Image 1 (cartoon, protein in one colour):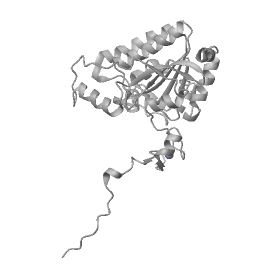
Image 2 (cartoon, protein in one colour; image 1 turned 180 degrees about the horizontal axis):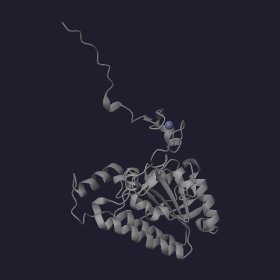
Image 3 (cartoon, rainbow, N blue to C red; image 1 turned 135 degrees about the vertical axis):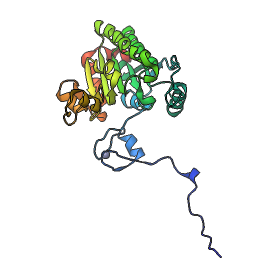
Image 4 (cartoon, rainbow, N blue to C red; image 1 turned 60 degrees about the vertical axis):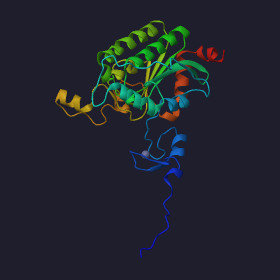
Length: 283
Ligand SMILES: [Zn+2]
């Protein structure tokens, strides 16, 4: 007669939420609570994990100061686009996974008492791709900054234009640039922060156009992928090509700033670029 062993397996539904994350850079197992505390930067090697738009806002803004604008804007499917899946299905899945309506969130808030218009992108929503909604929100953030005469801060995290919206996505490059040009003409400062990754049409438009361009350590930043670049020029690319530090050495990026210093760095820039903004923030 077979011996029946008692069942020691813990019940799946009593498992705690995922507790550990393995660092892809140094392979260290990191306790998720500790990772949250370190702003999702690996304490042993400094690897910067990607963060959601909500986490980014929490890292940068004074607590409780964010006032979101245009939260309801959502993409249509004007081309009836289908790749492996219909575009509306991809949108629905991304909405469910992130709780967002699209890949960017914008509004007003305070950074160490400096009032800013801020837009943050979310890579978790279809790779942070820019379609009509992201482009429209960038344009509205620039217009909002202009109307309120407060600096604009944009934190990018994007693979580029959203192919499911075709030419309508590419049109956003021109639209966002036109809005930023009006901001520039009025002398309202714009600080761009490029996080991993900032590529394609987002890099080729607003992300690289800050009065000051900051980047997070080791962020992938560039237009076409490295393989396309190497194929086009028929040469091997130098080591570290399209990483934040390489771009800093070659003058595309003004400063590489670790996430833990980003809020303080932005506040210092705002003090310098828009000295009146702190009073406006308090008023
Ligand atoms: Zn690590």
